Image (cartoon, rainbow, N blue to C red; front, side, top):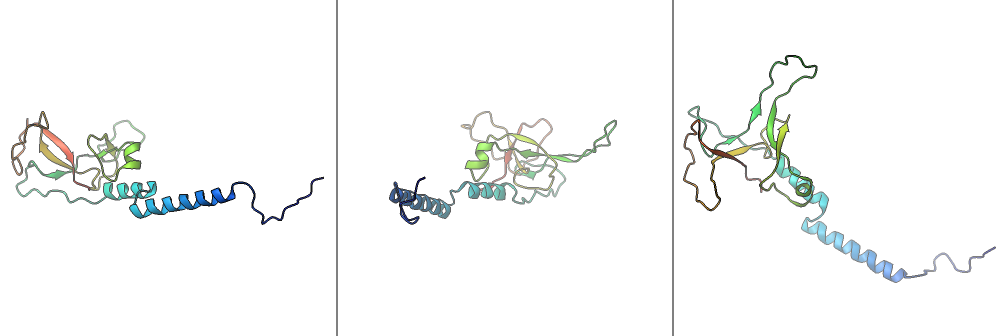
Length: 161
């Protein structure tokens, strides 16, 4: 039979080191929280930026121009022989896991996918720009120019910083 020879309030082992380590952990946590570097803060900032409402371009002449902000939607069609209902889908950014946990805005290149969310948001609104073969070739001034049928275009993410 063993008898306890110490009072429960007596500290044993490396208690002082444990206290200092706990204080350092709390200090690091509070510093990261103040700087906005916590993972949950980064994730909420990215969500807020990616789901931010975007105003689309309004065509005054009925044509699409370079520099217009657009959303690409595949409209629901009447199902022929399917048991599941079809929905309108839009082209949307699909950031990878690392981007979700480390960045506060989308970076290019980024994967895209179809989404049933057809409201204009930063993740599914794109700016139409002229396609360039190289980034080092300066682009021509093409804003407000009409897009012709065979024009080479790029879809770029809207600015969400």
